[in-house]
Picture (cartoon, rainbow, N blue to C red):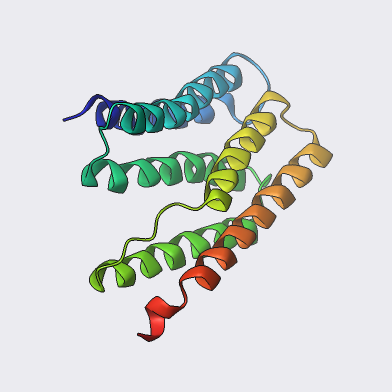
Length: 176
């Protein structure tokens, strides 16, 4: 197993600790919320680190291509689900995000069956980075309603844009 894949697995392993500290925080500022934020930031940074190592040291593997985006989705959805539970993140917004993720994953599966690979696009990387930064802001400044809505709108907008872009650029996979 490559170093890049081990780092990705470490990100996945951080998710239960993140969830536990979020539960203990009860959505309030304080030690548990800031510990959650620290875990989330560390996990988010591993996303950039494993990608850099995989490309720079030629450690790109099929396992890594599968696990890296899954780890990103698990981490960000864990945060959004906690915020949903506390009534901070609307369920409709989480549903938009999950729908995009399932739709793009389905498109990738169809393309794969036809011998094509749909690489992560720039807008998908922007979506992931802005989502991670936005969720960090929500944890760093809990209870600021205006900030929460700015983050939610940003996440939904980048999610929709990148999802539409994937389908526009790869629509032929569905009809060939």
